[in-house]
Length: 292
Image (cartoon, rainbow, N blue to C red):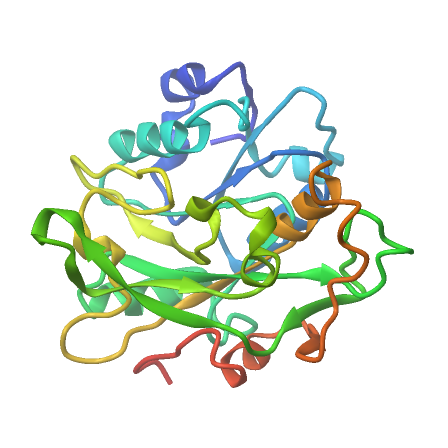
């Protein structure tokens, strides 16, 4: 199907639904105009055959990208805008694998430089997994004087340590911990937690999943099926992925409540990000599981 523009989600599901027939499908939620083109190009390089961009009218894409994506007019900052869009696509395309991210976010999985997203998900599905835990790893510019919005691909840095996990209580079971579920923390959301609402401090996101009837994405990047929220199957470790993201740094440096209190994101555990899956695996920020 030829990529084109749609005047809203309803029109896309009416006229463009056939675009969802061939997965995996990458969904890009555009919150502002920062690094939208590099986000889309990164998804294309990973091998996603279909990319759907939810964006305001103000976004202008280069001709080559405009011809590559399905563009849907959408206010991604409205209440529940992202879960509503994702859930509509889940209902429209059961059995299809999806990935969702925001602009200035970049998905990495083990060996992604040489293996396509389709190859990786085929292996993951063979292990009877329908979802994949992703850690959202904060990226930030090394020099906020040069890059006041904290976004710089050339000088991007990450935290090499400072990540931890807590048991996730199940309110329906007397707050006993969920099996194979944890709340993960770290990065800028941990170091600058006084500026982050408590509900937004986790860094885990089920960023890759296979749609099925009745499945729904909830607020907080979790699903209504508890098995989708697990980090591995019961019998061994599974693949995990990382979403390397400028989103938190950008928010901290553009929100009036925090922008004047933060002069530098670097600390003694900052390292230059080399944009490789091997670095993320070496730091323990994603897991290859049994995939060699």
